[in-house]
Image (cartoon, one colour):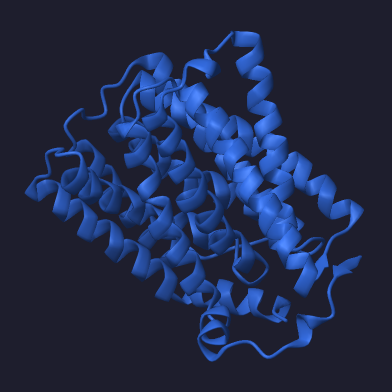
Amino acid sequence: MTTGGTASLRRRPTWVAAVDDRPLLLVVLGMLLFSVGPVLVGASTGSGAVLSFYRLWIGAAVLGVTLLWRRRTHAVVTSRVGWRWAALAGIAFGIHQLLFMVAIKATSVVDVTLMQVVAPVLVGVLARVLFGERPGVAFRLWSGLAVLGAGVVVVAGTSGPDGDPVGMSLAFANVVFAAVYVVWSKRAMSHIGALPFLFGVGVVAALTVSVYVLVAGEPVADVGGRDLSIAAAIAVVPGVLGHFLSTYPLSRVAANIPPVVQLAVPFISGALAWLLLGERITALHVLGGVVSVAGVVGALSSSGGRRLRAAARPAEG
């Protein structure tokens, strides 16, 4: 089903067309915005559940207003199947966000980032089952190098990988639900547009976290102005913008590719934490970042990476 205005056939600006025709570039831009998230969470002082609550509701509101504006000038693609996928993905995303922020508060940004390097493995397994993707040995080896580099980056952090066992368990569970969200998002893109999908995800995720907040008795009314501003920044930058840039091209990008690209996040987040939070950064940190980025580039440019991009290309348009 397509709803909205009649202006959807208007000619796109040249720069928009140039970026839109490069789905991998959109995924990379989304990764850069995602890198801001862990630093913002680390800078907050409230509980992870409260921060997640406000981040998700603010994000859902922004997406809702944007969707209403979009429908006035462009056609919006939706379907019952698409909304169903949005609801399922929203539950997974809400749990992921809650576990992500609670885990950071229980351990550290470094520990949670370290756990996230297993995401390509989890997504790879799910993508093989759901989409039949087989990226090949070279792609896996380069991805392994990226995982190694990302691991070096986070081990070089101030806290190291020796986090609280419960907190690290939450961090691992966060990665599992994030992987489920990625593959369900890709499945949804053939049934619903990226913007309505993200709006549906945002609302369901916010409701999911709200249930936890209500049951756990989290003090959402006591949030300070600073933490509320941080929640708004997370909602808009890695939330709305980052997720749109990462979700919109999913129908044209193999499911294995985004998690590999995001292995560069620990390096970038570490650099931002050094610049903005005064956290220590070492030569080992830089070395791990270089290795991680090299692995990402190698995986994407390998024969398996090129094959995955070529296989997704027919879905364009």
